[in-house]
Image 1 (tube, rainbow, N blue to C red):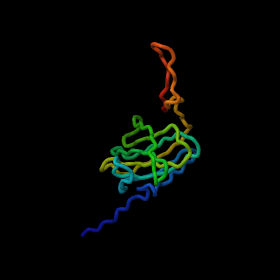
Image 2: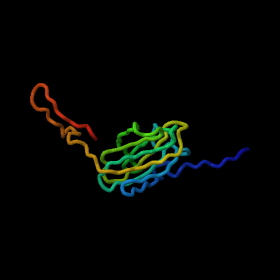
Image 3: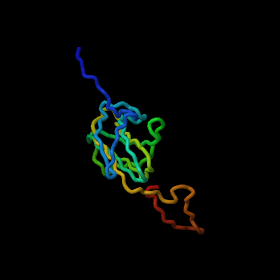
Image 4: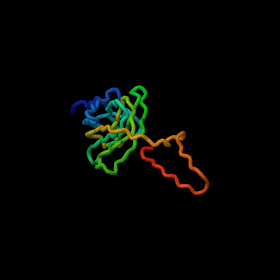
Length: 168
C-alpha cells in the first residue's frame, strides 16, 4: 500500500473563495495555479480559479494571464457577484502575446465589483500562471453604437458616410 499526500484544490477554485487583486495606481497582479482546481464555471473549462477586483469609476480594463508556453489559459469576466454572476463580454486578442498567454479587455467597466475567472480549457493544460489587471481611461463606444443613435444617410443614390467601429 502506497500512501500519498491528499491533493487540496486552491482556495479560489470557486467563486466564494475569489482572491482579491488589489489595484495600486490602476494595476495589480497575482500568482495562480489551476493544477488541482475544479471546474466551477462552465462547459469550456477543465479547471478554473477566481479573482476579484473593484472599479471606483468608469475605466477601461485589460486582464492578462501568462502561463507556461505549452498551456492555454482563457479569461472570463463576471459581474453581479457569486449568487447570480453575469458574463461581461470582453474583446480578446492574443496576436501580440507569447504562447501560453491570453488577454481580455473592455473599453468601459462601470463602478462595481468584478470577477475574473482564469480557466484551463483542456486536460493536461492546468498549471501555474500570473494574472494581471490594468485599468485605464474609459473608451466609450460611438454615439451610433445602438439603434437609437443611428446616423441618417441623407439624399438619394450613392452616398458615402464615414464611420468608426472602434469600441462599438
